[in-house]
Amino acid sequence: MGAILKFIIIFICATWIIRKVSGYFLKSYIKKRTDSFRQQQEQQYRQYQQAQRKEGEIHVEHTSGSKTGNNIRFDDGEYVDYEEVKD
Image (cartoon, rainbow, N blue to C red; front, side, top):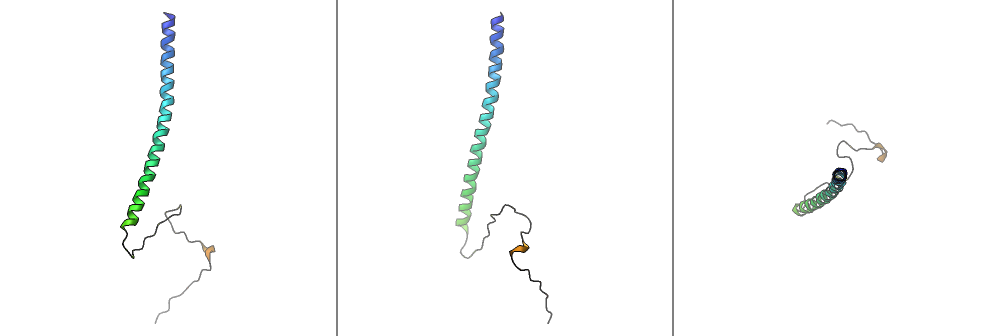
């Protein structure tokens, strides 16, 4: 009776460990595949958008990391203040 109980406990523990380990690997595999799929879709969408542009149309692609705010740096050159002249 003791050998059967020992076998059942070892079997349950081994099954639990295998499920946890395989779950981790499965999640990482799925994450890699979805990231790869998302990148492919974004690339295809960009190619489609470029093909749809009309001749003479202006399109600006933002490649910098920040997408908000004004990215004016004053060390890029001399800032010239101006005044409007009324006629």
